[in-house]
Image 1: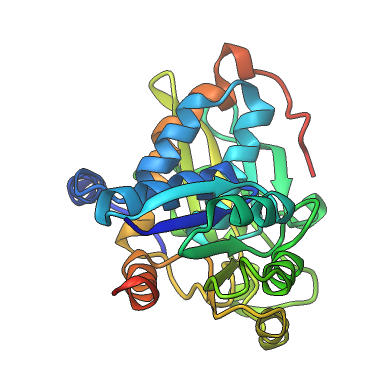
Image 2: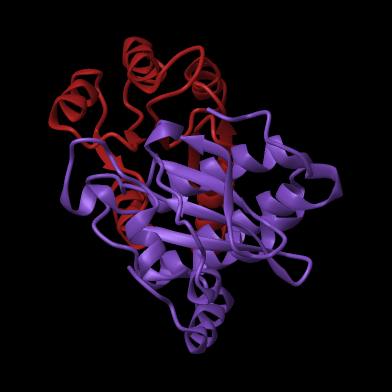
Length: 122
Length: 178
């Protein structure tokens, strides 16, 4: 079973993502509420993909993505950043941090599921 | 945008029954709320993350159902909000209120056109009447319109947010005014 690490400081967003994935996929979901916790959990849990918010306390998504890329154990894990900010400069910063994809909120469920499948299908 | 007729409630219920995870998550979070401040924060999370708008304002409706008082806003200066002088019946009916209120509620100084308008005007039900309204102001640039799924989400806010916002544990002015 594929494992996804969901990262967001909004409990509402985490709940919605978890409901969507558990209802419509067989992926296992684990969660973190900031970038620091995400980096730590990624090292321990070795998820198959990280779906991560950008604006978060303690460590934001860009910094967390860089940390994941610096660590040998987590550098190959696909990271999809999710944010309300859709400006080109912001997306550029996301890709410079090492993310694989960048999606804007509000999340379009079917589009996100397709994207996840494209990374997680065997 | 605009007035949303009551007959459309059936289709909104159908959307919810199909299990829109956004509406389900919003309902669960609102039912867990304790008090007005917590409810305002949860409403902000829902509108910002699940609908796609980071400018909003919440108003309380007076007992005569005629006037509004601002109790909380996010992402917009309270001084830039223009309250309707008098509410029409249509403003408080359906999932979305009257088009006149949508046009009136927010005026960005020095700007013109659609930027001056609220995107939605959501009556908040409590105790069998409209206890408040949530004005959803400018949508995020990537969010171009409010569709049927969004209306199902707003219907959840309309029916579930009243208890924590205006019930006994949540009465009084918001401490979370921003």
